[in-house]
Image 1: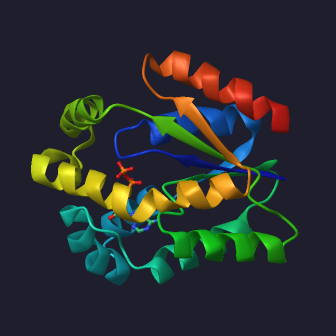
Image 2: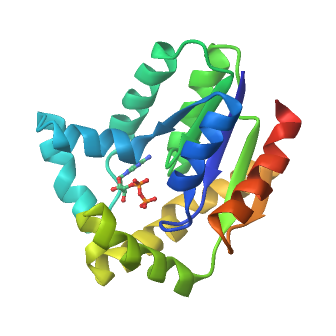
Length: 191
Ligand code: ADP
């Protein structure tokens, strides 16, 4: 099993690339954002509690996403590894993920970080709002908050992973296809 984190600020294209990469390399694509939106769409109690946090662009509590991920790791069969998208988002979530993987004789093999200019991020998110219907993409103030939360709570994971020698920055500017080629050229060395 080979396990990748795909990282980058909101609008960096993680979700789009993850779907394609998971298919190419037979990885289980685990997106906590998708899981949370599914809870909201299903009208569950958890979904109701999380939706107001998400619509402000804040992070949901660590325990919520850690529990969701643990359930998915154990429920996955027949894949060559995991591609974690939008998780971990805090250093505490990273430590929890490492523990979960270690217990199952696995590790985080590589952290891929998509680098995208700030102006390009905002442009992409506003463009996406029309198609996705996501409330957190509609309001420019919420977009700015998500980018700030990323810088404050999520970016410290980069330093944590850099020290472990698993950090790999990838240029996230250009066409979807170009970025896909950059990511897959790097990832294929592990598989
Ligand atoms: P994006 O990368 O575009 O912000 P996501 O779909 O990954 O979108 O996440 C949407 C929202 O879901 C986040 O702004 C946050 O409120 C919540 N969320 C998703 N994953 C996590 C996580 N690992 N920890 C805390 N909150 C999360």
